[in-house]
Image 1 (cartoon, rainbow, N blue to C red):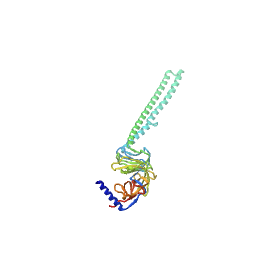
Image 2: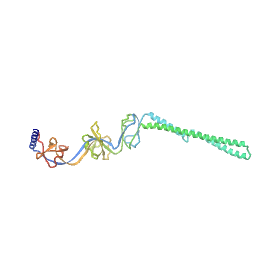
Image 3: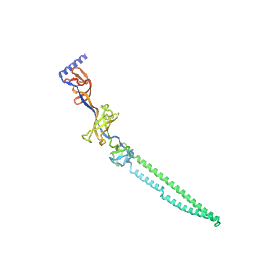
Image 4: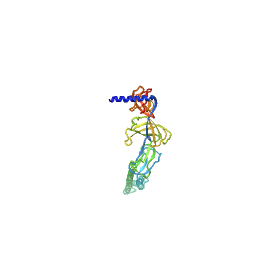
Length: 362
């Protein structure tokens, strides 16, 4: 009984189609298929730099547009107390370095005493040698010659003692210099730990905080990136992500360049969907050499198929369930593709030249 009803309904439908009498010959069209995406422009490589810990911004050492090298200190975090510690420690190092140098007042004083002692020793040594010869000739007594020799030995001992005093003082002053340098290095290391450094060579694109402002540890202070090389970060609807492949051409427009269109190429597809937006992120390398403004908005078309020959039929020639009625009264299921205005692509079921009938208006 059900089959009889179905046959009766189909017969009525076919009869209605014949009575309508509108026919269409399937023709071939050249089509382009694209997926819409929106996003922003960024440098090819970029970073939003953040402070190592929550602290006041003591000093910003760069301006927007400045060129920087990897490792450069861009921002100093902390308080004026820390800079005062560095100033005092640096002063101590300077004093210790002066004391340990050849012009040290402490060492010069010992050196002066040693010079006098050496002069006295040379004189005493000369006298001792002269008296020794006179004693041999019986011109002076042996005791006098011995006294002169003892005087020379005492002078030499004084010279040696002053030399040891000079060496000990120099070593002590060098130790003090080393200790002060280590103290300065430790303070400076703490100071550097609070600094924000560039991790790439490139350009400062934006400064997001002001000097004196307290920056949170997870809050970006500035953005740096490579210069004159840009990419798109685009967001694709989850229903379209399966159409995106590496190397696809992208045409995009930006409000910063009205009435211009630029080209890019898909270079990266993030396979993880962002749950909060239900979108996927893809990246595209910009082919044009123009300067682009980072984080400027863009609208893009990712070319899925370009200049493809495809059979197209009017959308209102489709029956429910994606089927068409041929001129010989056969209902043929078809596989449809994209829809362009009032035409729809037919991938299988009919070919160019087939004649189909339009469903009767109900």
